Length: 199
Image (cartoon, rainbow, N blue to C red; front, side, top):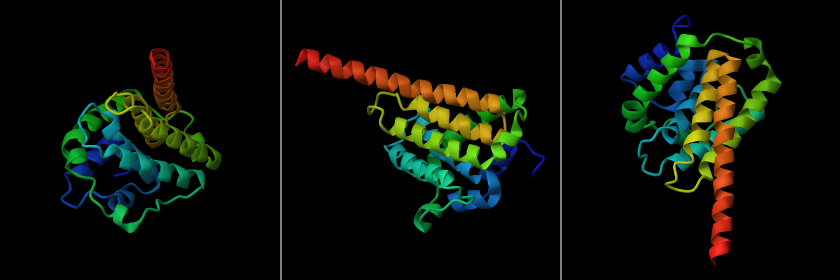
């Protein structure tokens, strides 16, 4: 399994009959479990599919995982209820096919670049801060504005960069996520000025 592409491993996991939970995810993906968990948790906000308001809960869990990375944890800690709760049909039937296709696109041109950097503890902690920032940025985007998409997509791409150990993919993720937060702040400030001017 270690020699398989990540997209193949992910598809195999999805095709299994066992429940799709964060606990099982950690058993399957081991040292990459933080990155894979963030990738799955932030995916619903990153795709233009109705999610029924579940995204804020997933973003809160992502913040918690980012804090654990910042603290240097190597294994995921979550309340047992969260770890053993199924990720749901939305992820496994709607969002996942979209994700697997995108991962395969990245895998075609990606290769390990500065792979050793991803093994450094300090760099691992920095990436935890990035996940926190992008999750908070997505959560604070105005409802129904679609502005949570870019910070969420940034988090997904950064998580994929960790899995692929590719600094170029990481740079793309940072650009997308930071750009999304900048757009949210700019439009939010403009809206505040407009309201003050009108009233």
